[in-house]
Each structure stands twice: as structure tokens, then as C-alpha cells.
Length: 354
Image 1 (cartoon, rainbow, N blue to C red):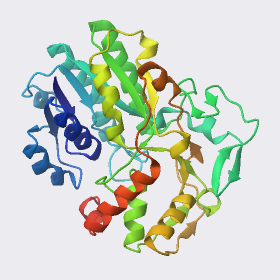
Image 2 (image 1 turned 45 degrees about the horizontal axis):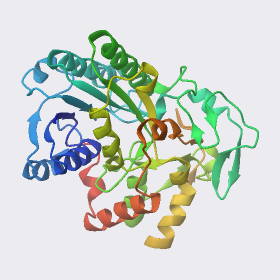
Image 3 (image 1 turned 120 degrees about the horizontal axis):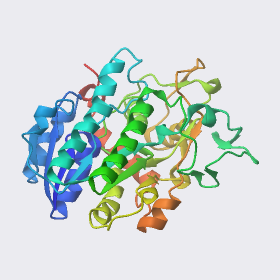
Image 4 (image 1 turned 90 degrees about the vertical axis):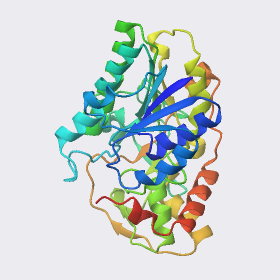
């Protein structure tokens, strides 16, 4: 299979490229290399036979020089929920990259009759609806309180039926709009399209930033004894996320490549580590203390825009449709990150914003 991956030298794109190349697929990918740390993946991917191109997703003319592919995996995005409001990127840049870039890829797919897989995010779900869920604290972690109810809230987490109404952040809005456009292009032009909404993706080599790769950032910072703080929610670190290793997506990607045309409702599903991988920052600190030694975490109870106390995705639909489940435990993911951090003690500097 000829596969084109956008953001191929990022953490997710690079992980998928390595795994798919190992399965014998012909992989081409492109990157604009504006993300600090992305250059570190270039040589290894070239050694594996991945064809690399320098191209900016926002420039339609850049994509004209790319080779034809049978499938496109969109792994390129500005992945920060604070993008467009944090002073590092403008709102226009965010929209051009995350939404305009999707349009450019869909036009490429239309030209080459290629299938399209969008890696989307849990942050398309409505912030007010999530924030209004009553929470209780168990074992230093938020959980929906007994009797908490909302459309799309299941015992295993949030299903695809959970509200996606605004506000979802500018970042979430660009991904939600990309989902809609991708499915519409698929219907209009007869292209196979899938939208895979992912929980927090994590693993060794992830670029460590507090607003993006929180697990990698926390473990690398802990090892270096850098300042860490529990922000908002009383400063207790009870906020919870699930995590998923991107290589666990590979089995479902290969099934999607070979899938017959599905109903529109079956083209979108949550992919996550689910409740089994869910962890609070406080629990992550406990894990670090037990394995990496003691380190004090400070407190800043000031609320931060778009923060939510708890989000865990229910992947029941993905399991039903694709016979899929995550294969890498949260402990294995954290151990892998810690091992990488020991081998690369300046990783935070390598992947820090310029």
C-alpha cells in the first residue's frame, strides 16, 4: 500500500511511519519542520526507506509535488488547546494549519482518488458540558460522581454521542470542522474517509510541552528536577486524562485501508486507552516519585482557559467496529517515556519552542 503521512517527522507521524514501513507498506511523508525536535526523526525514517518531502500543509502548491498515494494519514496539526490564544501562534495561523491544511489534503485525495484518515482529538467535546459534570475525588483523581448524567456519558467514559457544541476552544473547533469536511468530501467524491478521535497520545520521543505532551513533559521535568505545578482545580492535581500509544493505532489503520464502504455513522469513532489508562497528575506524580525519586510539585490554583477536570474516552464503538483495543498499558507507556528521558537528558530543550 502506498501511504502518505502529513507531519511525518512529528511524534505521531513518525511513530506510524516506522510501524507501517515495518509491515511492508510504501511510506512517503512530508513535514514543514517548524516544530522543534522534528529534525531528530529525519535520518531514522530515511534509513527505513520512508520518502521524505519538505512541504507546508498550508501551501496547496507544496502538495502538488508529492507523489500519488492510495491513502493519506493526516497526523499534522498544531495540537495545543491553547493555540491561537497563547501568544505563540495567531488564531489565523491555527485555522490555516489545522483546517486549511485539511482542505488541501482532501483536495489531494480528490485528485489522486486516495482514502483519507483524520487523526482527531478528544477536545472536540463541549467544554461547558464536561465542566458541568459533577465530580468526586477517588484516590487523588476526579471521577464523574455517582448519578452524573449527560448525553454520551457512559460508565467507560465519553462516547461519540457526547455534545460537541461550542465552546470547544479554537483548536477543538478546527478539528471538529475538519471532521465534518472530511466526511463531506468522502460522501461527495466517493472517497473512503475515516475520523479517528484519539485520547492523549503519548510515548517515547514525544515532544515535551505542558500544553501538549503532558505525560512526556511531566516525566522529563521530574527527572531534571524542574519546576512543576498543579494548575487550577484547587491546585491538587486531580484532573484526569487517558492515554494511548500511537503505535496501537496501526492494527486499526490496516483494517481501515482494506475496509469496504461503510455508513457515515461508522466512519467516526473514539480511539483511546480508556478508563484502564486514565490517570490524574497527582497519580502521575506518585508514579514518578516511586520510580524516579522524590520531587516537590508546586501549586497554582489559578484557572487556565479551556481546562477541564476530567476527560476519558469510551472506545466501545471502535472495539465493536474494528475488533480493536489498546495494546500498551499506561505503565508501559510511562516507563518507555522515562527510559527515553534518561537517554536524552536535554530532550525538553530539544523540543522547546524557539
